[in-house]
Image (cartoon, rainbow, N blue to C red; front, top):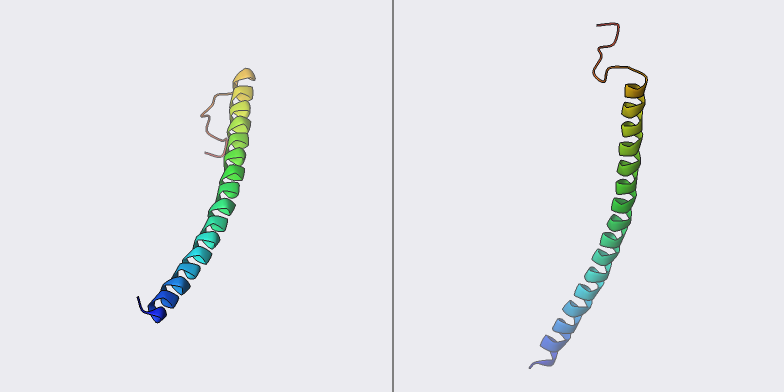
Length: 69
């Protein structure tokens, strides 16, 4: 093989390694963000569930129209 061709392939491989590392960092950051969003959704779900159950315990209908309708 031609020496210039080998150098060109080595340069391309180095760029690809850098790109893969950068993409891995992005994916890792997104995974952390996804974990936080899942936890937030779970907390909101639990909060809504407790509010709905609390309303039923107080004898309030779940789908009552507000008084201004």
